[in-house]
Amino acid sequence: MKKSFLPLFLSTVTIFPACSQDNSKLTTREFLFSDKPVWQDEFDYQGVPDPKKWSYDLGDHGWGNNELENYTNLKENARVEGGLLIIEAKREKSGKRDYSSARIHTKGKGDFLYGKMEIRAKLPKGVGTWPAIWMLASESNYGNKGWPDNGEIDIMEHVGFDQNRVHGNIHTKAFNHAIKTNKGNNTIVDNVSSEFHIYSCEWTPDRITMLVDGKEFFSFKKEPGYGWAEWPFDKPEHLILNIAVGGNWGGQKGVDESIFPQKMEVDYVRVFPLVTKK
Image (cartoon, rainbow, N blue to C red; front, side):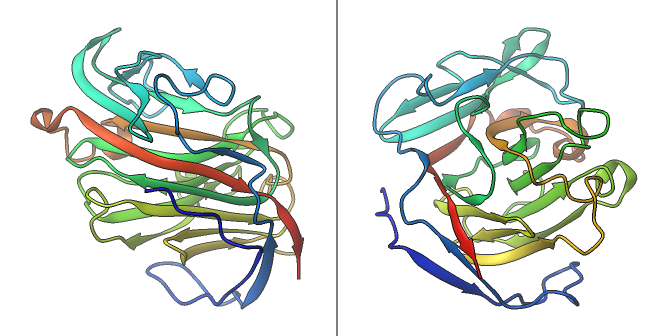
């Protein structure tokens, strides 16, 4: 199941028009990343996620999105078995909620400034599921010291009521969904819940690009004149993996209680450092 590392590569990416994105200013460019991960988890062990690499977010307070799950640190919700990380959302009484799940992160154990983030995963399925692979700022440097001023990078989001469509987004003070200005795009991925796909983010000092299986579907460029409100992405961020249940987006068409439990299975997480940009 594991894929071998690629050799040192210079990836030339041509941007093609996609869905709702304005591509008028996007051009062909080249990135150079190391062939050796600076941080990785291959999940070649058994038990709980490696505590040297992962921590837990815990709680049942809705997480700003009116989510319906309680995030736990229980093995039933986050475990490693058969070479895979399994994050599992279950329908059960947990805290003040009727669902349990897990949200794990690398803050303080894997904080990154630029690079290529690569995650091979298979997603849950069903109305009401909301899995995500994303990043948040590890430091509070800008504005109100919180969200969205310090930046969010959504490498992959999927809502179960729209099967086989995955989204990539960024959120900043100037560009975020709360004020209907967020920057992002989406793409159709066949068999998103029955097969593994590689979700990637290429992050450089002047561009953030999302890819699925090596195919680009969203790119956000740092334009001249951008300040921290538009581009706070010059500080370290950490990775987050989770399955939410319901919520403002995931629950737009309700929650099908009959589908649970649901899993997100992750084959590996690898972070390749940026060597240079040409």
